[in-house]
Image (cartoon, rainbow, N blue to C red; front, top):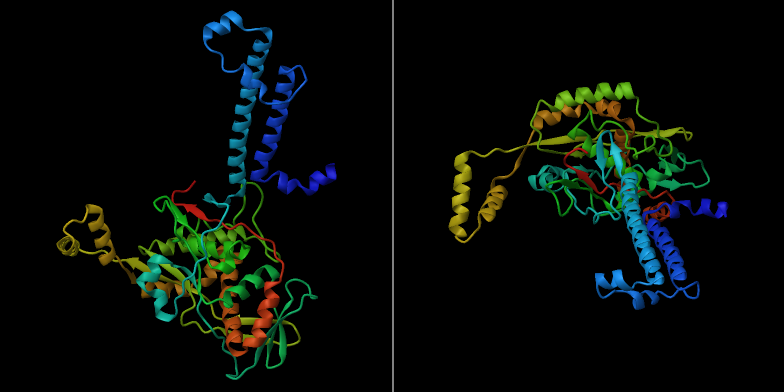
Length: 436
């Protein structure tokens, strides 16, 4: 009995199971109630129909038999039990939600039962920095499709060897020379799926949702939904909102940081110092939005022979926009022009139209250039997060090049990677705009 319960413990502690357990408790209590009411002869619930309702309070005072009094006592006792069970269920659901939610410092990330629809947006080159992409996606976007090596005609290949230890299973071949890629299974599978797709946007806080005044809704590329890699990339997008408050690795309500195979927690002292420096830098500018990008970055391949490892050069960077502030005259002219074309428009219609026509961001090249040289600060602030972002950028470029150069070999490798078994992870779906 204890062994079977141990095996079923995740099931028994799930939210849906609270309702099941409570239902069986209620049924048992009702069976006892009807057994007592009927002298133990029947458990049929129809018995209560013949005794209830009573015609008036006077009848209750004048003519209730002992049996009816017993029924009334038992009825209200059962009602109290039912109300208690309902209260327990409500508390259990609240606790289950709290246990499932994820915390970055004091920030609560809500984990709903189902993720949003997959993020299916792309941007290449300068389009990554367009206002439409900044205002609707932002987040992270890696669009590079090649790596650079000594030879322009180098022959690239990748293989996955499941017999090797995790972390040494991905092998990269350059002109026949094989090196080990330092990726673990939980990283390989989603990065390959990402590179194999037709879209480039990784994660966005601007997903669709019913209450955008109070929440950011998180949309992930399909490859990163329900994956620890998706959580790492989400934090790379969020950290600039509050470098000091969001520098620590995510955790559940109780317990330590959420770590993948091969990861270590941050160096807290180094992280705190780096996050403070980043916070001071960000205070210099009124940032409207940003995107972590690889536009115009050369990913350079560094091969090491004798299976000693593979490395790259090239780092992602944040591109920053700041909001454009129109003059009062511009606002008035835009409003009058809209009203002239739409005389029956409501005030809300006019407001939205003016926002759409005048709302835009201006790329901040100087601040972007300043922050481009600060990636080491981001790595110090949170090494697992920014190493992950770096690896996704580099390996997606490598994989796309192989995909385009050798389609048949790529198809076989991508199928092999898709069959890798990794633990599913419930990625956050919403972030309250007010810290909880």
